[in-house]
Length: 192
Image (cartoon, rainbow, N blue to C red; front, side, top):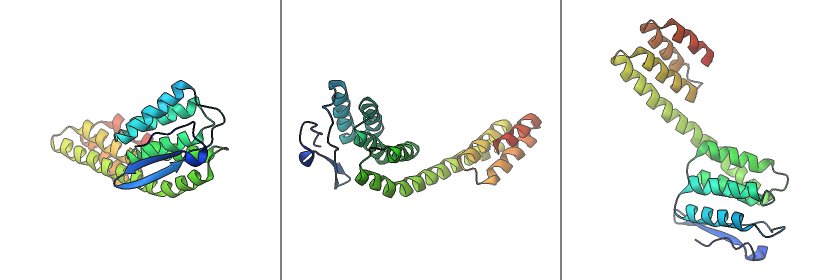
């Protein structure tokens, strides 16, 4: 993967990232001033982490570099994109939304963030639904083992992941009631 050369003119500055056989090129913004050595090191390490498929680390480093050089809004976009590639849906959404609020953002990257957000949000919902199903499955096993309080807690966790699914809340209350745990059953009411 080619690293960003911050000393090149805008027309020559491209980050080329090999992504699942496709190439994604992102032009960087013109710099008002050269990046500090520590910031440049963070960007270099972020590039390396991205190339190695360590998207969570790359996202963190790009975000840290952006915080050190807030005029370089492309760094925040790169943090969002790395989180997106790493399937860190909550983080990707938050960073894309944050990027869109920046007054000095690049319009092309703002458009790309707008294009990616619906897919990121859908993936986040799908991931939460899958996690909720796993929690509910744990709750079912705990009910069979007569571990009612743990079952109720697992169903409550499932409900928190998928608050539109009231069946999880009902199951949590039922498990608490089976365990004669009135206080826990009442506490479930604060989950809504």
